[in-house]
Length: 355
Image (cartoon, rainbow, N blue to C red; front, side, top):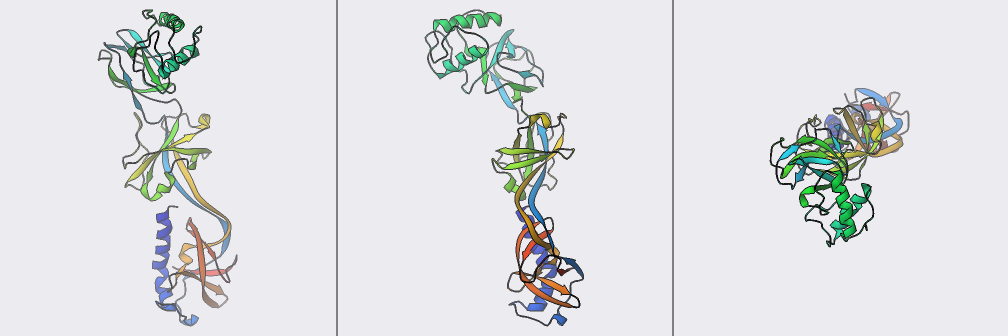
């Protein structure tokens, strides 16, 4: 239950029974003869249970937000991978003038020509990729040597490129991991320079739009539970939190519905057990966040609370034909119940409930 709901429960309780409390105690408190006090129309008993303060929002399994894949190649696009294709290290992301532009892994972009004598972290990043592709006989460091150039010629031969021993800016596109093509941004025959594709990672995530009243869920590293359509629960963690009111969008998919309307906060939840996520790309799930749990506490329905004149709350205790109002301390509000403690409050005690 959200903070707003907890407050509203208190306000509803005060509104429903406030008149009876005021008649009994007056605005400033005091006492009144029990026989003159309006009686609650129904009764219930104090129960012992575990209260869970939680928030649930609808969500969707997806591959995450798609990002543009930008080519620096000149010429014309002659081939693009189809949406849904997974492209790994060393494989082409496009062909420009029928030459492959391949994916390599790394955080640095390809910003200059690499040739013998070049030095820098970008050289090391490229050399690490070349080694990972199975090539050897060169130092994996920050210097592009003649041995590196020789290995590059072997790589270029395998790609059916001209064997120059140098790597041009247009030859490579870097990403931090393998990519899944979300959509083609241009058609074959378009200019090759610019955004040619959109792509995501290959790991699936859970995306949700959290209503503002439940924004306590939308905190990075919050531990959450993902409830699958069959009721199975998976552990997850909030990895990304958006800032705007716009709903989260996934290429080619509709965002999860915000049943309450109004402003929302988009979040992304990561799930380690990828194999347990539904295979259906349109699967709807639920994200549950537990803010607080109170085990083995005494509770009553929120409607049993009486708003006292001093601003606190009380309960009307019933014992045979007698009744009396006692002040109580409230704790956690959840699922229409409220934690209560106070003199005379024990499991099984009968209390009045406002009609």
